[in-house]
Length: 140
Image (tube, rainbow, N blue to C red):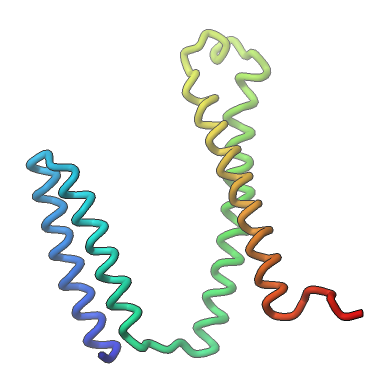
């Protein structure tokens, strides 16, 4: 299967799954919507594995740079957002101390955990990729 055929088939499958999910949500059958979405993802993954679509060095470099930039923007942004959401509840400002915006503290805690998870995931993946490509200082 070539790239053009793969793209056409992907659009057809996406539209079919979208129609199933929309009909399931309209009829309040959320189990069908979930199963339909998961089946679509599974089919698309199997189709992608069967299709031999190569990427060149330029595209690989662009993907790496995009991932680095995304991490460099997202991690500090979500960390600062967590700090801004947690700071008013810690300083006992009058508006926040009445409990009217208690959900902001919960949202801040979720952001903190997401930030820590993102940093840990980056550190672990960096460690393994660094070892895979020979950067492990095991030469003595």
